[in-house]
Length: 586
Ligand code: OXD
Ligand code: MN
Picture 1: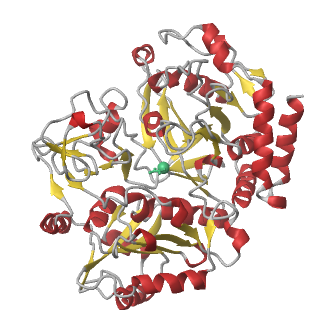
Picture 2: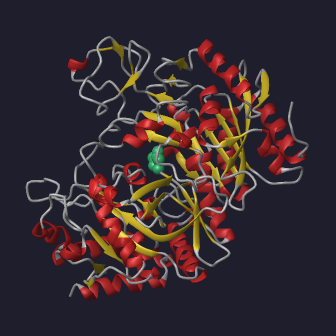
Picture 3: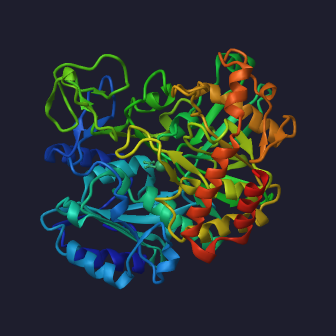
């Protein structure tokens, strides 16, 4: 029974029932009893496997189809009336044509299945930041995962109320046919349609589809920002906590930075770090005129391989209860394993495909994009402000990428507008972990390339406009943990030692840290970064901070070429910043 008399909502669900023709409709009320029933149903169909409840209480295992293990950017569309509003970096189709195509695929796709209706909230229900959605799905895995990643149930229907609006989301596994797989956002209709996939990033519609693609459009229209950013609190020995947001392309250590453990020297002095979010930040101007952030999610959808007691003990601890693991190795004792967890690959285990796995075969046991869906509250360093409806005030925004030679360890932009330029030019070099050529520079502005729901040039304009609305805007920085020597060895230790760079960043924000001006912005001198106990010498640091004018001239040319894609939509402020960079390098 639906716990709402919102006629628009009821009418839409009825229409979707007419379209997909399920045998049964179940409204998700958010109760533990109902979720427990669904876990049982999921086990009966094989969709969910109960793990060892002594070692991993409340944890389950799920396998996706073998052709369905990642987001599919080539099948992800922004469908708005004018093609130029989607911009050159998004796939676009005219909405009527896309609806026609999708309606054929969805027609009768839930016959013989149950339809679940999930009311969910991105953000704390009832808070000024919160936005509500309804996801319709035929997947128990989706229901159980949404119950971890978002706040679900009747309280959301109450918050929507009889007249309130919501984002419509229709998901069906359909036949899991990759040729008919579509992840489609209709920003002008507040509608998301996802079909023929069961992989989290494509089907947990609250995350990338809503909280980034749709929300970026809402933010543009309502003067706020939806960003692909972690939120981290840094507590000094006096107990004051300052918050930063950080945007990084994938494979740059975003989750590790979000859950950073300071080096021993800092811990002894009383420094602590607190995680508010690891993936998405919604940013608004607060009543005091400053920029405030919330994490609209309620859990972590993290990459399992590489997560270990050493690399990220906080993330690992978060997965020890109430977690759903996907496509990792399933051990004989009902626990899980993945490459990089430890040096003891298990015997008699099943690989991510469900086949008996020989660790000596040379084949990976876990899929490289195998995941955990873990409740945020499990994380030992979760911030006490995680649940604060007002969010946290942001002192600094940090952009970053993986650059072997070009970008220095850290630099500060000269102004908000210059910072927007730095974000717009963000790039990362491809690693051996991804298919294709290694070391190719891929532009990923603000790490939003696959997630911006409208024309990226308009998005940059929105950033510039927001800068004018914020009193005392956060300072904007760029970091690069990945500088190498000529043999390709990393020069900076990274992980917890990144705290040393964060200390300089916060020092710049409160006016206590020194800097020198270079062609690209303000940089620390080697003596401005605390190296004690890092094993890095001042000479090495000087090398990591150095700027090679020839490489930067090529970088500026690359940015100019990238901007060329957007024609005359590029904001004049950004063209001016690019000219400044070119002049500084002369
Ligand atoms: C991503 C993710 O792909 O967070 O960015 O899963
Ligand atoms: Mn992400």
